[in-house]
Every structure is written in C-alpha cells, then in structure tokens.
Amino acid sequence: MHFRRDFRLRFGRFGLVLILVLQLVGSSVAFADVHLANVFADRMVLQRELPVPVWGTAEPGASVLVAFDGQSHTTIVDEQGRWRVTLAAMSASASPRELVVQSEGDRVVRKNVLVGEVWLAAGQSNMAYTAGAMASRLAEGQDLVSAADFPVIRFCRINEPDSPLPLDDLPTVARWDVCTPQSVLQHSAVAFVFARRLHQALQVPIGVIDCSWGGKPIEPFIPVEAFVGHPTLVELAARAKAGDIEGIQAMPGGTYVRNSSWLAGTIYNGRIAPLVPYAIRGAIWYQGESNSGRGEDPRDYEHKMRALVEGWRRVWERDRLPVYFVQLPQWSSYAWTYLREEQRRAQSLPHTGMVVTIDLDNGNDIHPPNKIDVGERLARWPLANEYGRAIEASGPMFREAKIHEATVTVSFEYAGSGLMVGRVAGVQSIQPSHDDRLNGFELIGREGRWQAANARIEGDTVVVSSPDVAQPIAVRYACHPEAKAGEPWNLYSRKGLSASPFCSDWKLMPYDAGKNPMPAK
Image (cartoon, rainbow, N blue to C red; front, top):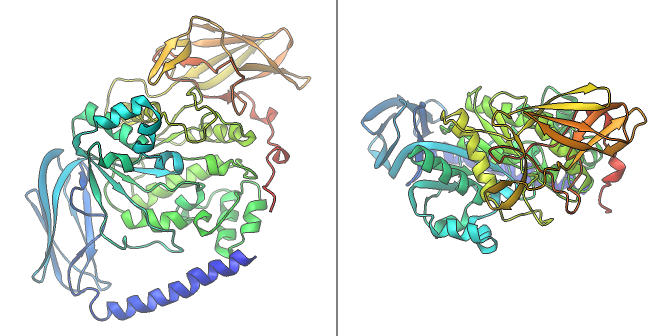
C-alpha cells in the first residue's frame, strides 16, 4: 500500500501548500491585472454558429470589457475574482482578428484569431501518435505531411500533468500552432487527417485541442461526478478516492493502475477541466488498449464510455455534444475481443458513432502507422451528422439474427449501400474481392461449441449455415483477437466501410479472467 501513502503525500502536502500560496497571492496581487483564461491564445480558432464563452480573472468588482469582430461585452468581476462573457454566435471566418480584453487600464490582446469548427481530441497513444511518426513509416503519410500547408487549420496540444482536483486554468498560456509540413510533425496524425478532411469538405477554419495521454485507461479522462449509475463506476471512484490501487486491480472492470494518472478523474482535472467551457463542436476519442491489457478487465467499458460522454456533456452543458470514437483493431490479446464488443454497445448513446478498424493491417503492431484510414473514417461521422453531407457514416452494424431451421439470416444497420466481400488493396483502398467467400462467421448449437460457418450475401443480409450445426442458436462474426492467417475479416458496405464484430447472444461468450491474468509482481 505504499502507493496510497505516496499518493496522499503527493497531493496532500502539495495541495495544502498550493492553497496557502494562492490565498496569500489572492489577497494581494493575483487579480490586480485582468487575466484571460490560458486556453485563449494567439492563432486560436473560436467555434462558429454557437455562443462562445470568454472568461478569466481580475480584481473583484472591476469592470471587464471583451471585444471581438464588432462585438463588445462588459461584465463585473465577481467576489471570487472571476468574470465571464459570452460572444454571440458567429459565422466562420478565415480573416485573422484580434480578441481584446480590457479592465481598469489593463489590456490583453490575442492575435490571429479565426472562427470555424473546433474539436476536442482525446485518448491514449494511438491518438497521440504523431504525424511525424506516421510519415516516417508510411509513404502515404509522408505525402500528406509534405502537403500539409493549411493556414486555417490550428492545433493546440495540452500536456499538463494529472491533478487530484479540477484546475480552474492551465498554468501557462496555451500554444496554438498553424498547420504546416513542419509544425504538423509533432501533432496527432489522426487529428490531422480528421481536421484536413473537415476543412476540405467545409472550407472553414478547423481547430483541434488535443489532450491525449499515451498508455492511460479511460477512467482518468472522466469527471469524478460522472462515476454514477453502475456499481463498477461507483466502486472505481470510491477506491480511487481512497488510493486503493490493489482493490482496483482486483475488481471486475479494473485496470492495472500504475500511478495517480490512472485514477478516476485525474487527467480530466489537469487537462480538460481548465478548457471548460471553451466552445467546441464535439469530441473524438481513440482509446481502449489500456482497459484490455494484461490483467485488465474489459467488462463494463460500455458504462465507462457512457460516463465519459455524459460527463463531458454535463460540464459543457451540451446534452447533444457529439462524441465519435474508434473501435480497437486486431491484436493478439484475449481481452480485446471483449473490449470491442463493449465499444459497439456504447453506440446506444445518442449522438455518438464508432469507427471500425478490424480490417486494417496492423502487422501485429499496437501502434499501426496507417492513421489515414482511421482519421478519414472518423471524419465521416460529423460530415454526415453535424454537417449534413450525403455520405455513409459507418460500415454495417449488427441489427438482428433470425433463425430458420439450419440457417441464420443476419441484418444490419448502415447497410443502405449494400454489402460486399472486400479486400484491403492499400491505404484508403477497399476493393471488391475476387473471392466471394466471407470469413469470420461462426454458429453455435445447443451442444455449446462454436463452429466455422459458410456465409453468403443475399441483398442487404448475410445468410449463415454450417454442416456441423444442425440447429443453430446464435451467430457471431470476427469474435477473436485477430483473424486467421489468410482469412481476413472481409464483410464491408459497398462504400468500403468494414462491418463491426458482433455476437447475436453475448451470454454464449462469457469472459474468462483466467485467460488474461495480472502481470507477475
């Protein structure tokens, strides 16, 4: 239990000293000058077509004026030294403007400010994976980076440490980078491809605020107040508060906690809370590996995703805030099969959507370099849902299975363009297969053994049968950590979007924790 003592010392003594310092400073000079929240910086993008909060601190009782793009708003600083105004919704503009904040003779100016679409990017190392890393390993990635001269695409990287309590502000002024072939090298490859596609489709400025952190589970990105509504969530929050990492490691739905940055709410507190309520259109999420690694129990991830989405919606006061996320690809890990199913179920939340990546060749690499297909597929969701483009947002998603004697007929959501047997011909290239055989379908009968099955496309359904299963009771597709060699999972929509793994009766696939044991200590 050394971690519990270290955790309390780290946050206990430091927190007490910090509070005393802030109290002393606050009584003298903390609010002597007007201060604009540090997420507001030169080269930033403000959200179009939504009210835009602008906030900061100053001397209590002082008058603060905020001016931007012909708007002027005045407010009085409250007793805690905080102020906030809201700019009226604006149209997109690529013309650089100045945001001016003034109070009692003090003046703060932020230059080269654009108005467009702003998205939050979060997750672990595959979201943090840089465009530079992609370019060094993927020829198509190098081509994209070399042509990444987009003056109206801006990136803001948040790198703050975790915190035991939500921070009111970032410790220093954020840095917003203009997208160039040089600057993009240090930013998220997925976020770059996503932003590039949105900009090309919408022809407006795009801003991405990236708060990803490699090697971290979902729990620390969730506001502590959102750990409600399910026993696993409640227990995780209670054990995190107590610093009980052994308890978290042992519980169903637990993770192999290494330090405080794995605990409920701590990354949210340090990296996301200081951004709220900066106006954003929505969020993209790419995570799951650290909730299904060795000894980590993927069960109840669906409820953690709900807490993440609802928690962010609550703090931003946007009950329809869109959140789009990436399903785990193939990987030689038992638990990944179950985590992918939990992710699929999380789509039941309104205004969410999932990107399927099981078909992309990752070479058994947990950090596959092809982030182009991932970012392009992510962009389809907002283009279809938020921006009204007539495109297919998703590949086929399981709807239902109808059993008739020895056959099972499977129908799908997102199959309007039709189904096909496909093959990966390259980056962003899914072609109809010359072999009409569908791989990855299995049936189970009352004898309780899954058997490989024959599957054929009939219209917008797949008909499945097996000579070894006379009376099937369920069907599944791609329900293994990875496909067999030479038998890629190959069900697609006619638009070249991969079908998600599914099982028509998940009770027939119980999770066995013994197959994913905790690492030896």
